[in-house]
Amino acid sequence: MNEMTKTTNPTDDDSALSNEAAAWFLRLRNDEVSAGDFARWREWVNASPAHTDAFDRVSEFWKKSDTLTNLPWPTDNDLEIDEYDGREDLPLPQPQTVHSTRGRLRAFAQIAAMLLVVAAATMIAAPRLRMQQAITPDIYETSIAEHETIQLKDGSKIVLGAMSKVAVDYTPGRRNISLLSGEAFFEVAKDPMRPFVVAAGPRSVRAVGTAFNINFSEQSLAVSVVEGTVSIAAQQKGKPVNASREPGPDALLLDDGQELIVSRADDGEEIRAFSTEIVTSWRTGKLTYIGEPLENVIADLNRYSSRKIVVAEDAINIMRFTGTVFNNDIDNWLDGLDKAFPVRIIFVEDRDLILITST
Image (cartoon, rainbow, N blue to C red; front, side):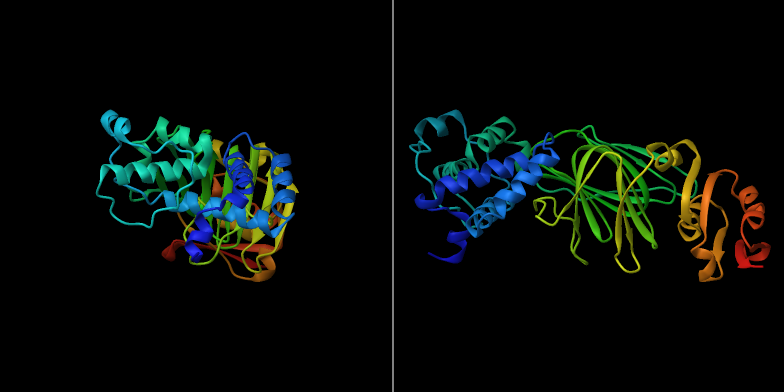
């Protein structure tokens, strides 16, 4: 038995374990999954190397099945003459062109046999949709002080903040989003068979029927869960977001009212409570902070200011600010900043620059 067969075609001896792994796989892809379900799955998958191997086999099969594209759906006559009854497990076909009708039917039977009745029913319910080719990602980008609401084809919604950019990559098997810069608020439509995964720098966020906010800058990453639960995993540098990968045992689970703060300088992280009103206030034209480093505040303001704001000294960056800045009145806020901090504001008119230095 070669390694590929061992990975993708469970034997009769471990078929029961494979079925159990498949049931967990499908459960984790359901938007109704809870934090308790994740905890029980972690206990199950860590109980034995055999459990881990079985779960990996199912995950690998699901990922490979997404490559079976351009296979015509069988006609009623094709189904009538086919002899396969689904009672035997068949090996996963190697990626190749399938020329005969009977060969195509075998390929579909293999998928159904591996992914159980639930997955087979899903394929039959929407066969043509799941066989479309992957599409080129759609890019959405806003300019200074501009917000945009993006209504996605599945009913999900993205509110994109100023000077922000996202790439949307939807296929029949996955919903991949990359927040390339800036801030965005996500409202996720439920689709148990297609995970909604957002990549933002060092982390990927997998939605489990949620609404959440992500603020991504050169200084930090903040993921704030407004409703539901998200799973957050480390994102490998240079690797595209992978929605087909299930959350591993080391993934962080955040419930509503919790946020993860990651420092991009040292990859340090902190989980803390937050106020939804404060975190999402940018959607109503104001930026509100409690004890936020000035470095992060200025990073936000630069997405709304027509002039670049530059902090001249590191000691200023770590000063903490509490208050509200209206995004259409940044100059007035800067005029009063020297009353709250030992700083001096210099408007460099000929360079369209605002410089903050110490007094």
